[in-house]
Length: 258
Length: 315
Image (cartoon, rainbow over the protein chains, first blue to last red):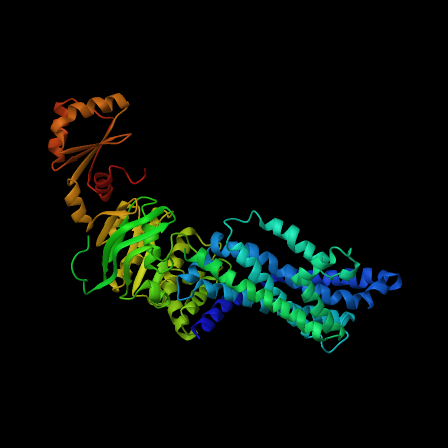
């Protein structure tokens, strides 16, 4: 019970910081994906739907890319915060050290971070979904399930990347994680084109990408093709988060209460 | 160093307390006791083990040996319960700089599970305590160093703690800001709050502490009130002599002889410890010792530290 309450208090802090500083993060979380949606869905989509591309995506390109962007932007919005934000909290600004000087534990701090990533990604997904629906990129009443995809992806990203970041002394490797991990994942997880378009040898790699599972859930939801596979993708995301959590808790404990 | 039964008013008690990080022993079997209502100091240079000791008392760093009790509880098993009753002022401010002064109080108070109604009342009082009432709604980031420090101290009082730990509370502050902080700390003491302070400022330790321990290289080298320590290890007065050339200092040292009870040789000056400064001055004049500058002052904890360790605090 105590654990639940103090994680909630850590979440309160994260959400208050978000409320006070939302203008900065709103760009990455909502404006940027909407710009992508306009450029890719409407602009590029017009070309694809008229040409040979439509054969491979089997949908209007806008319908195809909207759920992809919704899921991918959850990953992008959270990744930077999980890396640099955590380094700020444990080292540069040290707020997390202040938190563990109270009855809060390192696990509470970590739990609050993970939950707040989920809450904020959920809010951003709702905003994005409304824009996408207005533009005609949502064709099913299952669409709200796509919000779950964004929330789960945010939780996976925060729990895994912050577990990594909290073990680092500085941010030297963080740009590398973004360039070699997050950005390729963003581009090759079925966000902009089906993974079947990739060379056959690399297709199995996409299956390892949490984003691919998130994109599949979001796409099943907004296009109304929810089935057993959708559930399986949800299960994979839950499993990754569950596997990352103990590493995160241990990492935060070692760093904040050495 | 702490023998016999537990002092009935001891809020913190350590016996053989040790903290090692791998092969490095930061705190090497220290014994001490902090009593209710007193200001207790850890005095020593950087790396003496003061902060590691403070972190064990504040239950954010488990000890690796010995015994420790805080507020009659065991930090190993009662960490959250102990932390709910103490206030911690770390060496470096860790405020939420993106939030306002007011928000900092409220958010921090929520970590203790305090209701918002209580927090609003306390935050208002603490704003006044920290002299930050007119900065209530300002973000923390642009505040001056002194203001941030006062906010950090005030924030540590949000849970109305029985015990407050202050790690180098005035490091990096200008003299005016330091004196304002001392004034606030006196105020806490008058209210009966027990304070534990680490410092490497001698004047701070002398001004604030009822009792202190001198730490060096992870060990406690002595303990007592500032006056007791000065009485035990040094004479009441000190004459500092500076010379134009090292050779002159050497010559003065060899001829000064019995002019003082003890002479410490530093790189840039001689310290003559004496019970009678005037007599020493006369003796120096008889020996034709003519320094470039000559300063007579009362002995301080700096001299105690030098006598105990053979080094100055700055080394």
